[in-house]
Length: 184
Image (cartoon, rainbow, N blue to C red; front, side):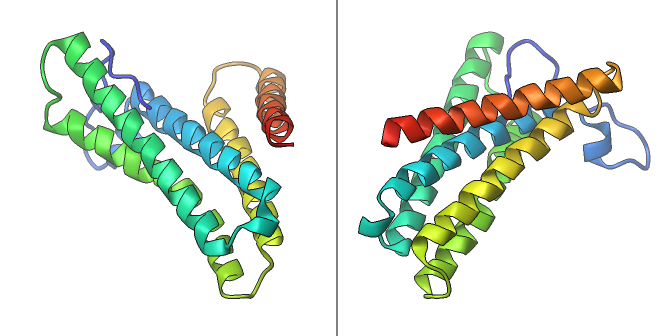
């Protein structure tokens, strides 16, 4: 989740601009970082469930995904809260707490489509293995999109952005491969 160390996470106010447009780079990075964590967690769960798709119901798969991701986000929030207290010797102010909570809630958005796919499988519209495959595809595309969002503002040549994005995708695929090896 977003680091709350000594960096200033406050947004620089600007008249007529949304909070998103004025959000500090540290906060934007924190939001992207949390989405990466949640996406990898969801992908790991989906890949593990795919190994046992014949033995699972769509409802159990959806419940497993939701509980695991909610647990991950809760743990990340707790870690951020503790690290803030350690770094600043005080509780987060209202703005920082709102940022931490909104970052967690927004990160949960990455599992909406996978849950919809599992819901369709539960209704009998899809077979569970197809829903899990679609969910893993969406999560991999999500990782690529997050990588793009992270790289697009970098002040490096376009070719370096492209190479960096390829490296990020390759690392994402490596994680998928490791998960597949772990779950046979």
